[in-house]
Length: 250
Image (cartoon, rainbow, N blue to C red; front, side):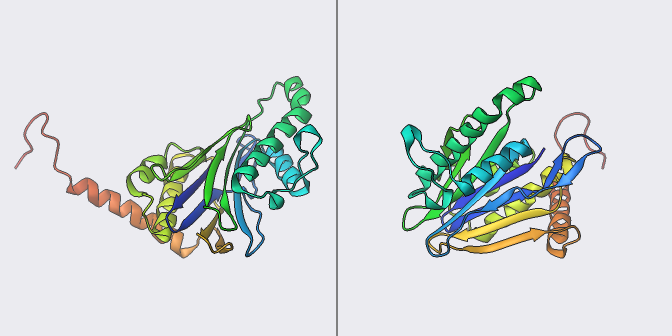
């Protein structure tokens, strides 16, 4: 299992992904799930992955080497896509191509073809975009009314994002809330864990402003976890006792 979140606010884009991959209780590894396809000054693009590791690695390789076009069109690499929409289409095409190649083997082994991707960034002067791309290669786009998208084990972190993130939220406040949602997921699901990769891209800058890995023991993330836990306990104590049942003893 994994957890990845992308937050697209007025000032830019935040992407966060854990690195824990497991193929059983005794086979746990660390693999990067947040990848960058950047040409500074021309484009900044980030892709986070969840699902079968072999599928995501094949998709990433195709996007780096080139995906065959339809109707005999030449191969195109992700860094060559002219717009973010066409780049998202290219990612979907890469997923479908991997499905074509691996379909017989997956069916023979009775394995489910499982992959989902968060893909976001900006090319040139066009608007910054964030997409969620499914196993079928189709996708949806993030909107100002719902300025975040998640993949993987998303249910534990979603309530925090629902309450705290708006399109107008400051870029680094969005990063902070995203990290709180990651911490909440890690506390509730052992399949999600450190290290955590994060990236921040400011709108129209066309370069990564932050590209960082949080390792175990990092002071800021440890402090964030402790402060969030303390804030929840304080909020619980501040809420009046429910008016049900016997009266509270004086």
